[in-house]
Image (cartoon, rainbow, N blue to C red; front, side, top):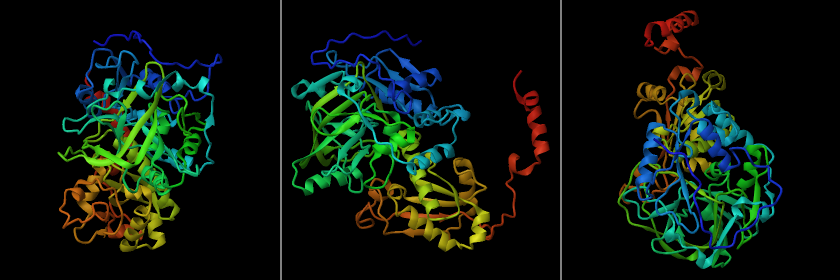
Length: 534
């Protein structure tokens, strides 16, 4: 049985900023306040407070993986072994955006982080993201440090010793312990015109007090901004890492927004309220004022250290060598009292690399296809496909009126999708009629099995750029695949010939499709009497 939490004792050995005497009431929703999210999940019986000791060395990760796979409530680990007794760093929240077991609120953990009711549907979630993109941005509101919870405690320079932190090891074959798997990096272009917030896993470099490292891959916005500083001859790029920031901000940090779009204004539009931010202690970046933990520092433009390997979103753990990536040196850490770090234990779906990333990519692709005036109704990344598939639902009646044929539709869909930043992350697109619920993997597999004709229904895009992390690209020989970041993409047609004429001369052989509404209601009315246990 789980015990009730008793507040722990901390002995601060560093300066602590005072709060304003006037309570700060803004940014209190679960979308803009991580603490409010924890309270909301607890109130919805979707959070378990675990007070028994739990080790950051694989045990917390194993428990979290089991949570994902069983659709259990999010675990909040209050008693993490190896927690630094002097700083109180830190508690851990697992599966912050896992799925729920109840079909009616399956996407509830995701929905409430976007300001939606817990029974929101996938389409509700995508429409919310798309509407925010087309709304007027609400830039963040700077607040004084005295009213910023993230400034309650501050560590500078030699006060920082990450070897004493309970940084979790997530997979047995990981090349290190990962501090950030659901945090986001903040960088700003040298001219301050573009502020990029982006998610990238971040590993502690073993036996170092203040050095970490993250993949900074070409094609990512973090790499583009970092390169701008390098091009100007700068030795370092000013940098911040936010852990336990506003939930909507963490979500937006993983969205494939176009380059030069600042995520902070998008977050305000998404939540209908400007986000409070506060200036960093050691650079000119602004960070969410209510973040749990903020790391400030510098990304080197010249020095690299080994990063990885780590189990990733595709569901595999390969025994690879570490890859040299830019060295990140931490100069300052600010944090709330009793801070909580959310983690993602990437692997087989569904975890945050699918629930968050998949929904964000789906929204961007749906918006792009609509903008190209193609007859689409829905686009969705099935979680079961590990964010490697996008399934696009087509309005068949409209398709018939437009007179678009199979080859043209596949070509146009591919050009639109693979021409976006979201499409860089989406290797395979399937186009299906609107009789299929693309969020139901069973219906999609039915269509794939019965409507795809090998050799006739696939258009390959060998020159399209893509994320160089897909196993069928990275594991192929360099003779077969010279560049894992180019090609390996396709559009697969799952429309039968009659659908291009706007016709569908069949009904699905299911309870829903075969019978009249009158008979279905009669059956459902007797269902409990006949089949439910007394």
